[in-house]
Image: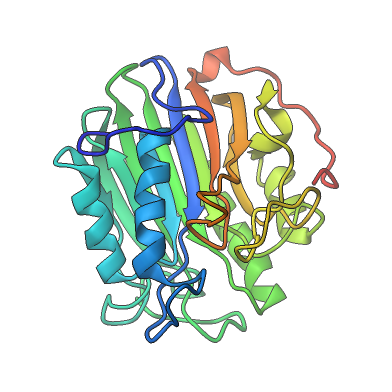
Length: 294
């Protein structure tokens, strides 16, 4: 990962060029005046975040809850070959970001856009569906330099309060994924579980599949992806997902609940997947997957 040097054991770590290592991670926005030694204090957590990224070394990361100071800190840590797309969710392009970070030595950016999750997606900062704060999706089209295949990446963060907003957002993001010419990968903090209507829509009508469900290998327990800095917990709410279309094979998946001397880098666990892109002619028939799988 360029300037990041790995020192800790990795769940996945660097992989060969025929596959793509993807991470989805809500890194938790910082709050000012946090008491020293509080687990939420960004000044302490940021070094844990760098440590985790240095060991895992994904090629692309969809992050959520990233404030500008965090964005620039992470960009500097990644090194010169890393780039990002996305801007703040507010009308003036300020505020919270959900950037897609990527290794430009592996992926060549073709185009990208950011849309509001609303009835007026082209209007920055717009809200329509009951969410009190703007919600967004970042859509980026790449060419994989290792395989020559196109990939559409979508990173999003659904509303935490409005059920209607989550349902409408699921439909909009599924439509964006359906427009991909080949591989589509959706990453996000969805603020809902696999038992919900948004999940059922995205994995049925939306023609996406849950990487956790279809992976050939699960490398970890099925941890809750929201821990609130507590110890890892089996069988809790899995609200952070990596979804793929039928042009993507999922070789392995993990929910990374690593702790450093008992401390977590975020209140969310990162989700990681090793993916293999394939041409549509190679795509396997789509399975019918139970929407109740947690």
